[in-house]
Length: 427
Image 1: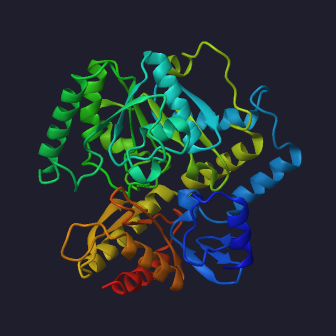
Image 2: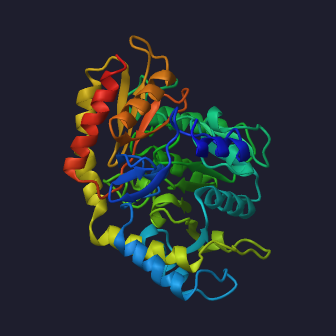
């Protein structure tokens, strides 16, 4: 155990997980690469858990942060804040939600917390519908709606949570059905569930489940759910903390794959918008956002220096069509990995879209999750110079691949080759 690791264990919680048997200290980054304290260089295919969305040390963002820090870093939401208003205007327009209002927080957890507060206050109900295998953060209320046992340290909750089928296409009682029948079965299950409970406030759903291992339903499922929900006045919260800002390639927001019944009532966001800076937030229709009848502020949400980073990062993302790059380069990467997966018995499925790709591992010849293999591949990939993540609702057996959206074709090929060697090493 190195000196920093020992100090970490002496002062930080035991449950604060670290990757790797010999944990890594990242000291600096540039583009799609990072370096550790020993000078080793790695191709980064996880981006600080999808936060470094554009590139490490992106000059446009570092310049904006530096210039803003030289003027004023923070004043709170009690004062007018030009960068916050400007970023809110851009996000409101991009959200496609009519008469949108934006509230900034410091994280995705806090964004989801706020959305739950708004929905339950607006609907006067503390019942929430959530998806099985979901993850929405680590606060008390967010843990209470998380449908992933590995990330639920307590069953206590201020909310009554009911879990709905559909977030995982290839597991569960409807996995054997075709897409249309799968959606129909999930809708019937939702209707049946609603017949047994008091009226819920909202359904919260990730268009692609992040910590759950990058699983998703067939396109259109949430549009079909939305029809059922609208009939009953139930709100739809799209958790776009990991899927937003073009990462999926085909759409700017993940919910747009389910847009047949209109946009969500609320959208939560975080992670990539700040390119590593701490930004989260909620977009909602004005009548929902304005429903609170008591004062509320955010001390650090919308602070000037993070808003400057968000503006610069969003501008760069749009001007350089990084959504299109995610679609093109991500499409090549996922096909390459599917070709590899077809030859490795322990690979159950390669899934995802854009630069959000999951590789689920099982014990060969079975459908049983293989978390040991996932850990072994993580170590082997690092040994080869590649950083990836892991997750999954079935015992953390899915590899998570989410590089910065500026990834080049050459870097995608390099990363795929390293990952192929890592996967083949577990045979």
